[in-house]
Image 1 (spheres, helix red, strand yellow):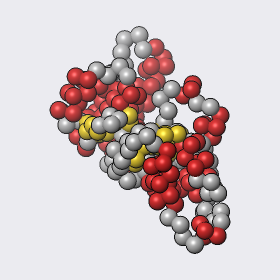
Image 2 (cartoon, rainbow, N blue to C red):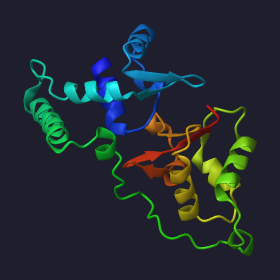
Image 3 (cartoon, rainbow, N blue to C red):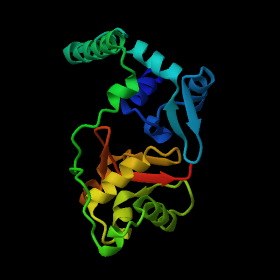
Length: 207
């Protein structure tokens, strides 16, 4: 399980909520932190890799497939080992590889002002933070992006997407996918912003 956590965090290239690793016991999480592979934050708990963790995750890509992995399992492990060799031989950092911005679910285009007020230079990042503060019960709680978009009436989706992608670089901003995808409504799926080739449905600020 610890191997899976390291590799998953490396591929995600960003912090992930601890709830996504439901079968990871608290002592195993503490072990990863104590060994310097992972840093953890509170309220809610999130995990992120250290540089040492990235190095170990790359090494884990060379793991041998388990017995009875079958053709599909052996293919997967061969692919992971190829990625390891690519990283080693090219000198590419894992974060640089996995943070490639691929096609998003909603094209990001040069934003067009939705109103004269926005055209006069309203700071959309500030507006997003203000809307979050109005929607979240307390700092650090996750809210749905569908609710955020509804609160930013008059602002286009491409503008919000671009602002969220910029905000995601801030240390107190966390955009994460919904862990139980089956619970998502059509509106919530449409409201997602794609970052790192992964749809994010929830926003937390102030961790």
